[in-house]
Length: 152
Ligand code: UDP
Ligand code: MG
Image 1 (tube, rainbow, N blue to C red):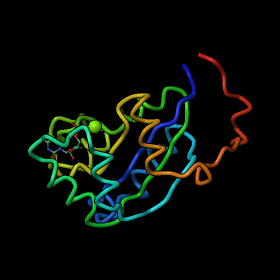
Image 2: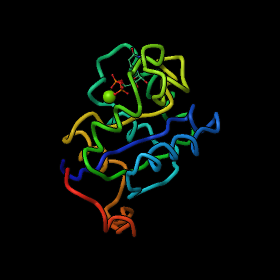
Image 3: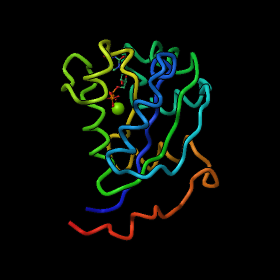
Image 4: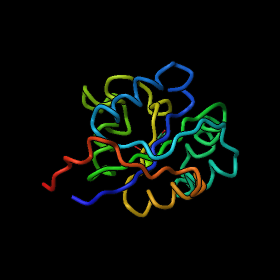
């Protein structure tokens, strides 16, 4: 499995509810590597670009209103197969359909307040990382336990 990077964001509801540590910890414990981390309140322009594929959907304006309403914790995580694995850790978009054990399954109820975003594919990940982070904000580093990383 190839080493990938993905963009993950804890939405304002996750920050407001004090779930940052809980959510970060799940990615750390899984074994992924944190490459970038910052908290910001996104501008409307940033939010509209980020959710541009949903521009024609009825929920678009409400979604942009919400995502710009307060701090978001933006992250880049790296690891083997991290893009799909992060989506599994996150769970289904509708929290009531998300499996228990997933972030949305355990921590959310409402689709409009589903606490976290994760890139849905390789192209999206590349686009979103570039949209939210400057290259200089990303850290390449070698965790000391990576000496025993093995190929599957
Ligand atoms: N969303 C919403 N109502 C809907 C569908 C989506 O409020 O009917 C919001 C929800 O916060 C979701 C985001 O729009 O996380 C992006 O939708 P997408 O289908 O891309 O879901 P995701 O990739 O976040 O699982
Ligand atoms: Mg999506």
